[in-house]
Image 1 (cartoon, rainbow, N blue to C red):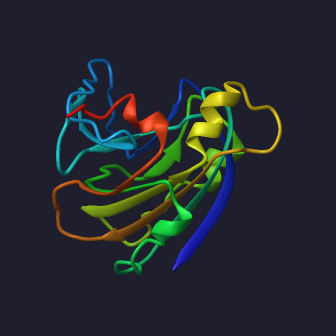
Image 2: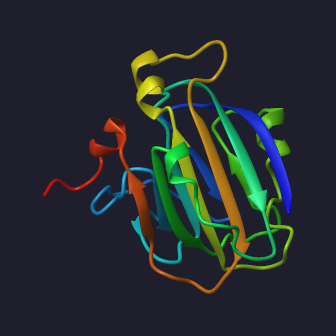
Image 3: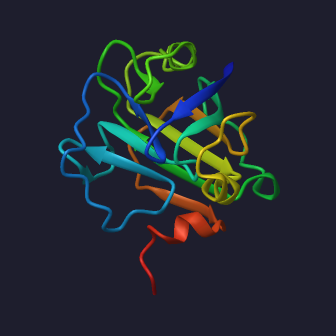
Length: 177
């Protein structure tokens, strides 16, 4: 398993997981789970997606992100340690799949090429904690108050699987029953 952690600077409450294909000019939130959206260009939720958008509570500032890439599925998520956990399938077409933001910084490049295991599709499990604290802080200048874990492994495409949702921030996106 390969594991890398970086202090990623986010803007507009988001960062992306993508290869060379991404276009969110017409992104629609309909049916969005509140954490990670598997997207087919130009912005339609789809399994598998060409790329993903991950929503952060932090509007602008640092978020601690760890990426773990493995040859096979990692063990089940520790649900006690995370507020939100969602799995999606991604194609991640292109030569340099990566976690990126609007900022061109060293942190993004340290999380690049995490799909060293060959061409997709991939299963991507995104974990988040501290999004409510990130939203309350709005602009975070110092140490991140929010943390994400992204686990990636090669796997056939499968529907999005929402494992856990418990933060308040995510409810602003999820459909109300």
